[in-house]
Amino acid sequence: MVKVAENVYAVLGLFHPLGVNAGFIVTSDGVVVVDSGWTTDSALTILGYAKAASRGKSVKYLIWTEHHSDHIFGSCVFVREGAKIIAHRNALLFLKDIGGIKNYVEFMKEKMKNESKGFSVADVVFEGVEEVEPDIVVESERVLEVGNTEILLIPLPGHTPSNMVVYLPQHRVLFSGDAIYSKYPPNARFSTRKLIEEWIEGLEKLLELKIDVIVPGHGPLCGKSEIERNLRYLKSLLSAK
Image 1 (cartoon, rainbow, N blue to C red):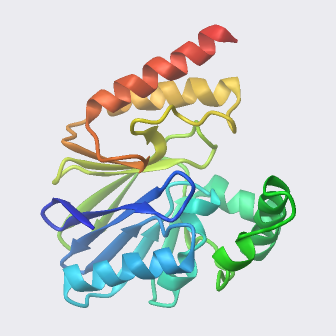
Image 2: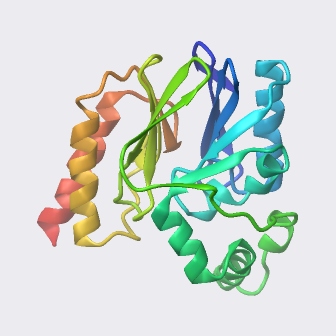
């Protein structure tokens, strides 16, 4: 756990082939968690840190920055704590299309089994994942006020259609999810040309915000220079097409 600003924390390098990041915000009215990690054990780690940092405050919300499994499979841990899930509408549509979290787990198990030539570590990794779905869906910018804290939810499709960043204007902190990769090249394997164009447009708008610290989806904490690096990479992809 890293304290990135007053009452704002990042939990970095959770279990995942590339290491996945999450975090939480402690407000006067409870805790807001950003992403749950890939496993229930990762989620329990985030929850333990949140309980310690907040002195036992309840978890009010869990915000998904996208629908990919490394950001949402631990969600049931926070739902059991009473948290409401906030996500982009496209994340909800994805889950409905695939048949829910349980079917998504089976899809990932089969995918990982094929990649590892018959053995699936996913049988162990995804044990305990339970069915959940978003309670609150977002399609455009939305301000979430929790106690004394203003949280701006900004849809930023690109890596997937469901990506959303979480901006804390009072703290000048951005939880970017996979809209921004730190040190890694942006993962555009799930993107169309249109999504890459939207991704570029969204990142250019982020450059206008007052940001001191970015908690990326993967990689170390960073600043605006990583937005610029991501932009250069994405623009090079477009020019190569």
